[in-house]
Amino acid sequence: MKFLDWFRPGIKVKRWVFLASMGILFIAFGIAEIALRFRYYNGYYRAFYVFIIVSGIFVVYLSVMQGMKSIIALINTGYLQVSINSRKLGNLIYEKRLLVKGPKIVAIGGGTGLSTMLRGLKYYTSNITAIVTVADDGGGSGDLREDLGILPPGDIRNCILALSDTEPLMEELLQYRFKDGRLKNQSFGNLFLAAMDGISVNFEEAVQKMSSVLAVVGKVVPVTLENMVLKAELENGDIVEGESNIPYEAFKNKNPIKRVFIEPEDAKAVQEAIDAINEADAIILGPGSLYTSVLPNLLIKDISEALKKTDALRIYISNIMTQPGETDGYDVADHIEAINRHVKGKIVDLTIVNQQGISKELLEKYLDDASEFVDLNEKKIKQMGIDVVKGNLVATSSNGHVRHNSEELAAIIVETIMDRKLFFDRKKIIEYFYLSERLKETKNIDS
Image 1 (tube, rainbow, N blue to C red):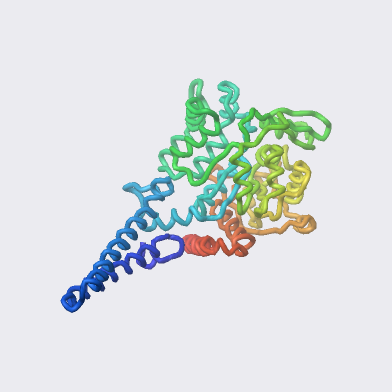
Image 2: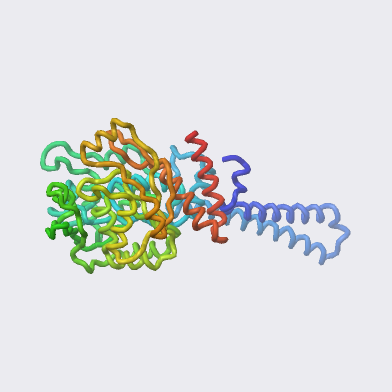
């Protein structure tokens, strides 16, 4: 860390350096006066300069102690992880101190889209709360839900790993899927969380314990602790049960989803999720499957009511491609209308959308699978009173799937929060300054 970096706003070191300097001046002045003019002074003056020296020593002592506390507090609270492989301590102190002061962001959803976004956001703030759906009933999560009676751990595991500050080997271990035997296709991370649930009071505590072990930046919270089941009514009136069955049945029978609902319909949200929404600077819905990842959270009345009342900036981010059986033929406006229809009100202020294309070969591959680009329909969105922010957000995964670019998406989210929220709040000046510098650093690295 450069010398001048210690004098940047928010590090809480300048005040103690200044005070210590004043203490040293007191000591030097008192010693000089006594050494040079001691014999000329009477008892009162001598006592005065001794008092000056003692005061200076006390001020220096206080400054050193408080300065150390400012640093140690980060370590004790877990915001500063110091190890042999860590970057220089000075840079860690500055970064972790200001990450703690970053904007309060709540991300609501599930699936791959949510965890992808979280990977980018954690470099701008540690005040992240991911509220994750527990409606999953497929794959390894569904097996554990049926066998052990626990809430599905898959989406929560992915969000924990996305926000964690661990070695790559640990992440690889927790994402490992067994290839043979009775555990075939089961994730080790799911088993780890299931075991943690066995030694915890409830699933929420198990999630927090796993987050602590993996040094998670922010919090991951299940939306509810109740055994929530997602159901859908199709256009022909058929009822389909199960998150994994809904898009399959809708696509197979060419019968679009009319609405989704949950049982129990009066499921209670985790209080920490409600508190996070009430305190947030910004709330992000998505990205993720509209009907099976985003809406299940919003169908919990406590969540939807809190979203209607909050003063936070409410942002919706749709998937880049349509999802067969869920959003066939949908544009972004259709996504937002579906959300408003299900919660019976408006809970979106702004939407962030992709404007970048993909290769012809990749597009043809998606078209073969009955998937296409999600169009914008900007005119209709603006008629709904919703602002639009555009960006080049496309990334391609190793298996050839279109995903959001986590870094680009996070940068646009942060810029939007700065311009629409922090800029107008005098109490957030330091956060605004920090985020501006952070964005410049990110752009310089990318260039």
